[in-house]
Image 1 (tube, helix red, strand yellow):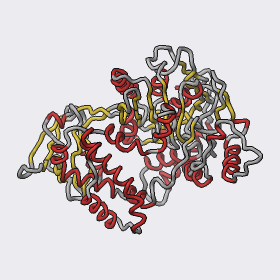
Image 2 (image 1 turned 135 degrees about the vertical axis):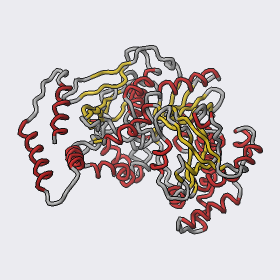
Image 3 (image 1 turned 90 degrees about the vertical axis):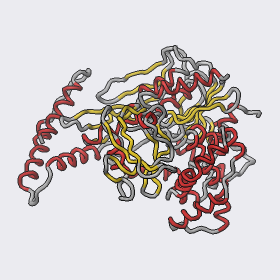
Length: 548
């Protein structure tokens, strides 16, 4: 209980630097303290006091918004390492085939590559402890491989063509975690960048990629933020700044106890004249919505896709005495036009909040074609289109007049009430991914097929295809790969009809080819394979190239 009291005192001491003054309600503190005392001293069974306190904190936060969370001390480092840009370990990308760790690629320049670890190696021992054939969890394997920089770990490795188990001693080092998934030239003047999140290194990664593409003649950019769950506010500000002239608002935050803070462009961005399209979907969230809102509200580019996730709450970490952390919501994000990015929620209503995307599908929002409405068109009296009437009614329900805003320069209408509504809406094609495809994907049938095929044919594929261009233009998924996929599907107890399979095969083959390209080269090659067949990507290119 002392931990809770100290935490409360520490938090309010920290907030004392703000303009407002705060007081602790002593009755509430005594009440919580007394409850913990009675439980720890008089409860019928023995219990772990620290777990009781953890549960108390978690219980308090559950009564708040959906994004205020408690992170136990042991989980704090892992919770932020993807955003902090690095972790300490051996530096391999791996996957599990059956119950064996197979190296997909060693991290370039990392400790494993320096010691001669290669793609296809099987790590079966870590410091003389077997990790293969023992049903060890993925988390436990990662725990054994990771460790402080400078520490040593002995790996037992089985390699094709080499007898026995070979020992490698790896000196752990800092391993970079990249938030840029892909970058490549679509054509001679159009570049593409996909960001998976916004971490400490995002701006540097982004600028390195665009500088390379500018050197190749890039004059237009497709910035793909689909599935980007957000991250650090400052990283979103830094990326947005590259596109905007001096003084333009990027975002501002405001809260009950936290004074309004504005973030504006400094005028030093190097992409202020670059034509840009931003791709978004229902899983584009938080920091990614900040970038999308800054581009849209300042009339700087075109947003293409579907309404974003609507996560506009600012979390601030408060460290407790045992190094655990409360991530507490302290403010809202607002786009430059004054739109609150956050969607409505009920205090303590996390279950309903988490079901929002499913509700969008049920309501028809995801499959609607809102483009006529976004362009401000009205239904002629002579037209009696029931589909349009339904979409018009849904649109007005989502965006009443009170939620209409104007962009800063062209005075275009944009919409508040949660998330960023695109300038060009791309309805979800429910037929693109069949039910069979979704089942195969969910049960890892497609991934396992690609991993096993690559494991068996890596050398021959590398020998046959000297470059990605050769692979992209010449490789076709062979029948034996499809046969193996069907074996995986049967093993997963997925039932299907022949017509379902035939409708699913084109998308499956595309995904398999993309996964093989990823493992032979990198994620950029994967996206070069699969992107041309995706709806939002195609719509984005039409904006940049209206008359191809």
